[in-house]
Length: 298
Image (cartoon, rainbow, N blue to C red; front, side):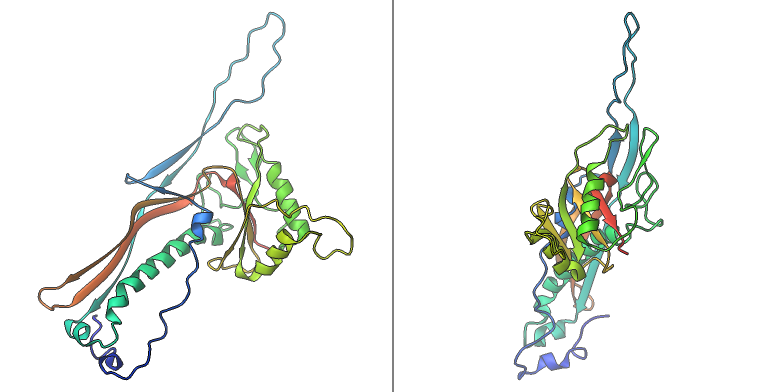
């Protein structure tokens, strides 16, 4: 199918003051605030989990030192997928277009790919509570029973799902700070940014930006103010109640570019149709779930 004179007959005649439907303000790139974005040079990328060593044991006088080995942890593999979109225009349509609409097609294709990047990346959070979307330990991104290599489990979600409030956000931060490593040793984990859908924009701002506790008649200081470095409000989040916290744990949400966005154009010899295309190849997912904390809301 090609865009011909019959598809856009109005563009062949003078008299139109302007064209609407294309020129809208765009969101800045948001997934880059949550994902560790890297370039890839291979058919796939792997992140391998490894442990440190556990607590030291008491050595009694004359007894031998107890030796132990680090353990190999979970491995996550990232395989790039190619995404593409194209458009075909007849030579006659290109010649007769009075408003230069056809020459904006590459820009439209680039916009399509930009939205694809965001949509694919954010779907990891949108599907983060689904058992159909699993990571290296065989569990969903947000789960109360994530596996430690040493044998225990940990949670990166609230014990009871809750809407975004002063109490629930404080509890989430407390849970995050209680994280341990795969062998049960305490690790220092801090919240970095609060991630919410559009519907929670003003709730989140009140919680993070006011001097005193929200909704309280007491004169208590708001301990959440200044705790987070950033607030990310994403229109690509589909659940109006769900909210998330990114922590400073490394190698969590990963995005690998195997081939960054490329636009191209060419003419078919037989038909003389003009073809436009955009392609990109990337993979995304998560390695260490401790980087993220979330709840689906009440």
